[in-house]
Length: 419
Image (cartoon, rainbow, N blue to C red; front, side, top):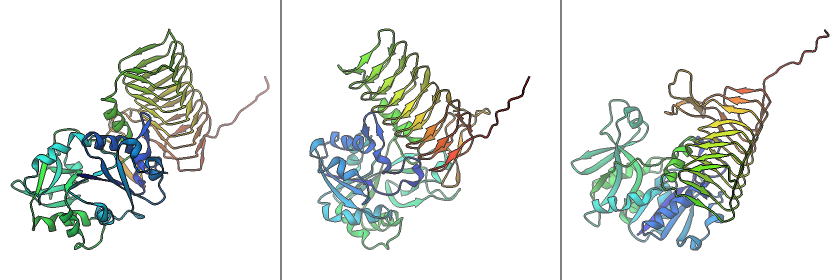
């Protein structure tokens, strides 16, 4: 049995964390892709094919997979031309039945046996689905058209009222070599994989397995927080021998303190939380409801962090940051605060690729790109996306998205009047 993992594409909707493929974001000290690879390994599969984009660093990081106990081969898909094209490129390495999954399926091991249990004949392929109660969500995904226990078609993003069922495709598939051969007969286009489902259904049975488990997804930058929470659900309390913890600090719940982590006097940490290698938590700081501090990150004194990922080598001073994702090598001055809830308590909206998006989140702070600098006493409104290498001036409220390589500041004037 093999696994084919899709890790190519521009991840454009994942901005501002898309300089590398989105699966290269680190959570709990490991890339998202490594978490997925370990899930595949834990399911008993060792032979893995990863579809990558030519300019990505995935191959450099994982090599032949030996260090992870895997046998990894790579296929380059230079342009984002869909899953069907990816499979055709990987065909020469596919030797048996195989699972096709996305690079963020760190929960794959939960579904493997469910899919295998629905495969009755050698010619069968099986798709993973979930009942979707939100009609708006159904209109944004592939939906199964079924006859009895068989799939006859995948309808991609059906219009309102035309949904063939309430079964949305999750993105994990049990396929075979015959399916890949049939792909060759479908005209090349972005959704040729979905079209090949309908074509294959005329020759062999396509089964579906329905799961009630909430699966992880990774489409927009704020999805990092949900992915983090999924991993935190498995987190166990641990303190490395080289970690330093002040006697007056208060640590409760499942808190993982990695090598060289340093917790200063009167700091309060309420798990689940991950404090990475050589990360620093300053005096009187509060970390709660799922904080992830990656390697060499620093939280200064008198800072409150809630449900936030702080990436490698970033430093923040005092203030409040909630429900946010902060990129690598950022510097955030004292007194910075993220607004993370709207005054009317409705879900937070933002803009992605010039399209207004309802995030579906009632609590969402800021998404801040790598190498950004923010001056003292600044703030951000809910759902704001700040690009890479941005400079935010002191005493500034960021009320809109800020593009890469720009300065954003509020003009103010000092007035001196003689008495």
